[in-house]
Image 1 (cartoon, rainbow, N blue to C red):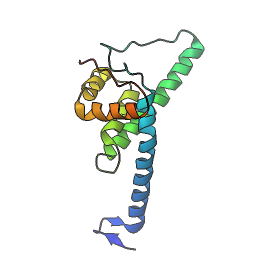
Image 2 (cartoon, rainbow, N blue to C red):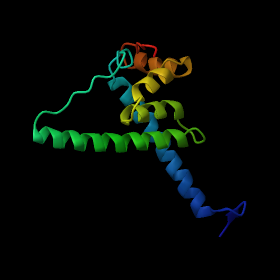
Image 3 (cartoon, one colour):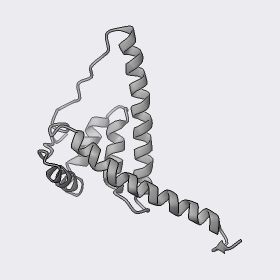
Image 4 (cartoon, one colour):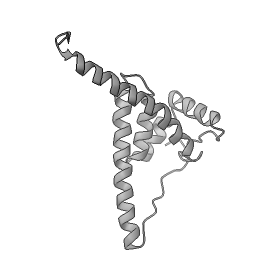
Length: 140
């Protein structure tokens, strides 16, 4: 069994390399797909308006939807943080993860991040490539 720098075994190295390649490939597909699905005015409001469910069935569906959305958001956020040191679109993936999570002050944080040219330019480039209007951003 070969040890690399005395800390990682060769099989562990190949597992990490494989997972890294899968996360990289998934980000190349998922991030642009999600960016193209957002409306161009998604970041252009003073505050986000919440729609509350009215019936018992819609409350259950809404709770299930929130759980799934937050799990997906946490997954994207974790992948984005990992991509800051691994290959991939780390900052964009973090923004997508934050947009899926629900927490107080989320919308202001999103607007603050997206209003930065280092984030907004690649987002709008992806939207132009997909034939969508560029994002309009309301500064917090």
